[in-house]
Length: 308
Figure 1 (tube, rainbow, N blue to C red):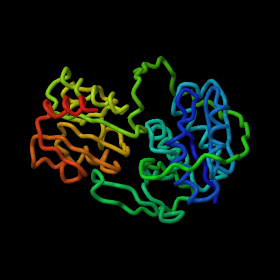
Figure 2 (cartoon, rainbow, N blue to C red):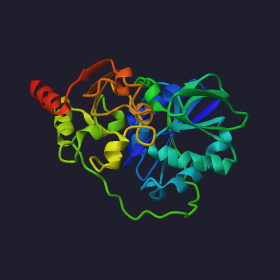
Figure 3 (tube, rainbow, N blue to C red):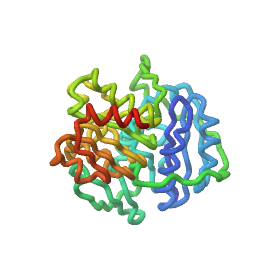
């Protein structure tokens, strides 16, 4: 069987970690061909070729792929689909935008957020905020899949797959790039950070959320937030961790002032070590934490930051 994996590119730079994790999942299905599409994707293609388990890399360079518009990339993937039994990608914001369109163009179902491969036709994925694992068997000739990268180990670097240049597909001309507004931060990107410090409604205000930032900076960590904190205006939307936010699985996750609603747990419960700080000893977050501190966060967090 042959698998086409859509590489994750940010400004034509390969997102190596999530792409390598998707390779680990994809190589269980067959020979993996990686597709790198961008305005200048040659360097990203070379980087992808270095991932162990990659049989070949296809690189499509064209201005229509410059701004991460879903429609032209979906048209490109669909044009290549006939040679592959599986079309896959890491379950990032881009792939969640592109692959449903690919599935529609091919008139097949999409299997989203797959966490385990049972066989070439059968997969596991979480439902009900991660409280139930659903086993799905697809009879479609072409399977379209997004893999939840946090549940797979990254494939090692050291491969040497060949790189082949391909032509761009016809632009469906359904969307137009206007502008990007990018938040610049010295902190690690949330979904790939090794350490995440998240704050919840218990922080109380946008001003006091600086306590989370100070602790994160001491640890070289990314900053996250619960939906309650985001909805309250304490933190921006792109910091949200949970079922309707980002899914993270860092080596260390510190939850501060977060009660632990199931929607939030769905986004972080695969973290290797979970530390919870909350003054409510009955908070659900303590049921999943490895270490719990029942304390007033306004006293505990500044002390922890000072000690660090």
